[in-house]
Length: 193
Ligand code: 2AM
Image (cartoon, rainbow, N blue to C red; front, top):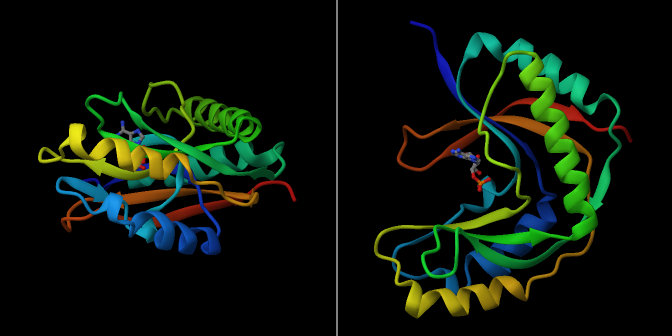
């Protein structure tokens, strides 16, 4: 039987920023609440496009599509600013840190180019509109939003990073078979320097 991979396209974060997010956010008391699952530091990334289950034999097509996508796009600077949650404050499912508005536009245009090139290669994915964000924690059934969401949102909203450079995108395979998601980079593409 054909082997399938659960794929998504993302921009990686610099290791110093991941260290800071781990120290200041992921391990903060506001994140250690019942029913809240902080993203493991090594899994932090900015998703550009979620592809989903795809035959492994499609990887060369995805590689070529990403090569075309990054062809005309220069690296750009991003700052992480503020926080929020999806879908709303009363019943949050995902808590996130946001992206400054100029970089949000650049990320949105990169995500659109990636999605279009993949579509031309016959690779589909999540049809939902792109909303730039960095997922920090996911919510389980036991989370008490009335009690714990306010302080967490305040903590996320106060976050500000130094500017950093997005200069490559990656295609990752997400393995859910081991209890926690394990991400493996299967393709890397540099943006124009
Ligand atoms: P996120 O970007 O909000 O964190 C791997 O599952 C990654 O793809 C996760 O980071 C996840 O959410 C993102 N993603 C986007 N759309 C998805 C979907 N429809 N199903 C699962 N993951 C999705």
